[in-house]
Amino acid sequence: MSNMTPGGRDTLFFCGVKSYVYGPPYTGHIRVDFGFYHDENLVGIEVPLVWIGPVEFYWGTFSNTRVESLTIKTLIFDEVNQRILVQAVAIPPGPDLIRPGKGKLVEIIAMVSDTGTLILDSITFDSHSLRFVPEEAVDIAPVFNKLVFRIESDTIKPGDIDLNGDINMADLITLVNYLFRGWIVSFKPATDVNSDCRVSLPDVITMVNYFFKSGPQLKPGCAWD
Ligand SMILES: [Ca+2]
Ligand SMILES: [Ca+2]
Image (cartoon, rainbow, N blue to C red; front, side, top):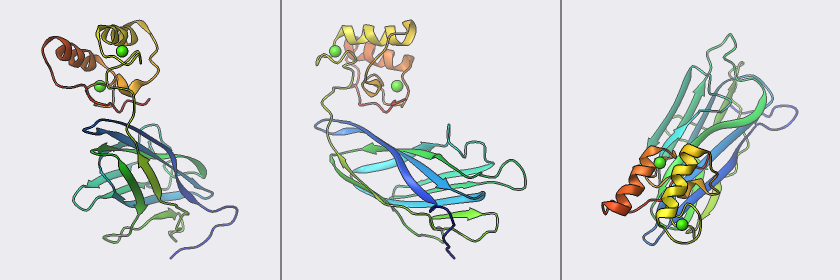
């Protein structure tokens, strides 16, 4: 069952899409942030999704979101059917309810294997459907518009931390100064050269290996924050 709620439609929306793709051959990452708005207490939210495009979603997080403190949160990736299931459930009564408001729900990350178009849409499967569940347990179907995102190749090379077009020792020194001396870098994904979505000591080691031990190619990173 679905119904309209008074005072504005409940909505699931994209609150940020970021990509860093370099090539050819093209590799990289996309991060999609979802937000949600509702004007009643919720005990649950369910978001089944399907993707189309040269990507594979594989990871995500509820950290720093409106549902971070909830008891039950699931994030399931099915790369065969290109589906994602996002669920967050509160166990009432108590402070665990999702109070009315607007903000982030989840962020999900995909590996990219080519340029092209990414479509991310909601889909109903295995009795999962896009719904917000209020305390009265009468499902609300939120407003949602699918994402159509053009994946383009970036011009910034992975590891070109000082953005001068070359990858050399100055970039390694800039990385060390960023990590240990509070320097600022203007494009963090180029700094995350081992592509683990963090800028940390392993990136220094990856660069050292690349320069001095013929280590693997530097990768486009996914550390946007
Ligand atoms: Ca450089
Ligand atoms: Ca890293």
